[in-house]
Structures are given as C-alpha cells and as structure tokens.
Length: 124
Image (tube, rainbow, N blue to C red; front, top):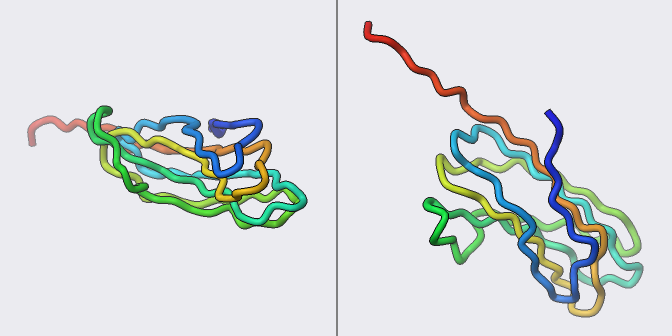
C-alpha cells in the first residue's frame, strides 16, 4: 500500500496550515511521517497537530495528538509516529511552524492506514 502525502512548499513564520483529512471509519492503525527542511538559522521546530471530529461538524479545539519534528537547523529531518486512532469520525492534520523568525520549507506529512475488515456472521 502506497503512503498518502499531504504537503506545503513553505510554512510561514509562526504559521499554521491544515494540510489534509483522514477518515477514521474502521481505522485500525495509523502511522504518520513528517518531513521538514529547516532553515540554516532556524531556532524552533515544526509541530504536527491532529484534530478529531466525531461528526464532521464540531472539531476538537485541543489536538487529539501532536508531535514535534526535532529541530536540526539547515537539515532535512523526518520523524515517524504511530497513533492510536479513534473508533469513528475524521482526523484533520495541521502543520505548525513554532519558529518566530524563519520559515520551514518542503513540509510533508505522509500517512499509512489499515482498516478493520467488516465481518458479518449468520445465525448460529
């Protein structure tokens, strides 16, 4: 199964950008990989925030889960995390540049997901 990629070419100073959504319907596993190119003078990392909605209308105001891509100024850094998915709803991926001085470039979030098979049984 090929990974799905969400990306943004340049993430503004102190900027946040929603980059994609993932259905949590029957979701069994979810792996997110974030890749960032940091400016040579960068002073703060990029953070990946994942928000949840059970109904597609009302979204969490606090991230369901978040993680930071370790800062190494002037380098391309990649981090992978496994997330315990909710049982239903939708997840929204947001990238956040916590650096107040420098942009981050070539910010990408890849995901791989597997779903539970829906099993139906006849009467015993």
